[in-house]
Image 1 (cartoon, rainbow, N blue to C red):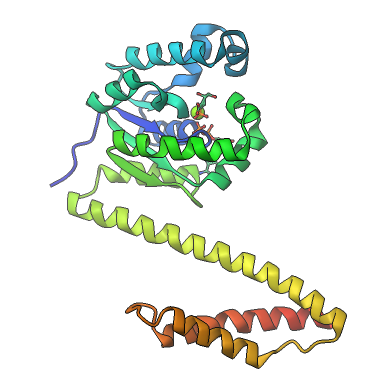
Image 2: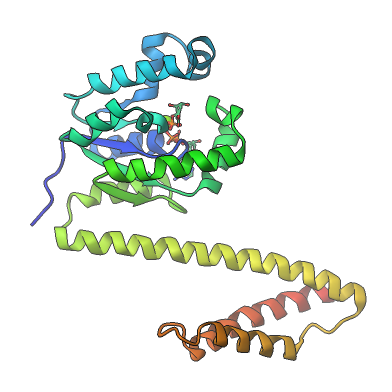
Length: 267
Ligand SMILES: Nc1ncnc2c1ncn2[C@@H]1O[C@H](COP(=O)(O)OP(=O)(O)O)[C@@H](O)[C@H]1O
Ligand SMILES: O=C(O)C1=C[C@@H](OP(=O)(O)O)[C@@H](O)[C@H](O)C1
Ligand SMILES: [Mg+2]
């Protein structure tokens, strides 16, 4: 069975997740209408969001936000909400009961904060510490999940690709859809694994500097053997992480590290 194509898609997620950008891109690729709730608020208030926060406070902003959301109940097309749309109970009710399909654009805090710092347009970011931001993330994440019909992983993907994936959700068979979601989880893990390997290589560089300074050998066989033994011990009970897997992966990691160290030492 094919999933019926919805008349309206509502994008939710934390600030900086890409709701505005991806929403515009879906509308472009799918030739639909697009509304950004923040832009509507600015149009109605005749003020920018930071100005509105200054003149009427967050409560004043949230009041207009709820009114705009309520006014969009018959809109057909793509709606980008603001990250704080889940702050008010009445908004959650509207989103839960809506016939529209709600999509949670999920990301990670690190890339989100980096994007927002570059942009500098979110008043909440200016007044909150990273710890406050993390708390806000943890408070909102379950609310986005509660109202969403689908969660789409955004980490490491371009807005064009995320838009294409969302459009594909509705031209896909329902059985295939579960598979699509699981695969997107695997893709997200693969990206995380390679980000960690990259960080590992940065530490390798620091180690090479140290070894050069103290005239130490690049290859320290015993240390490498010990590490493999410890890993095998850690995963002794695991069916999936076998000794063979540990040996293969560690061979790749250590040989790339040794190659990098040798290259640096030759300089
Ligand atoms: N998938 C993405 N990859 C890279 N940059 C992105 C992505 N999505 C959004 N951005 C950038 O991050 C910033 C915030 O995006 P925006 O669409 O305004 O997010 P939101 O509406 O969820 O707050 C913008 O500068 C945008 O260009
Ligand atoms: O998360 C929030 O509380 C907010 C998110 C912003 O929208 P985006 O999520 O589009 O950045 C904007 O509505 C306002 O700065 C408050
Ligand atoms: Mg936005």
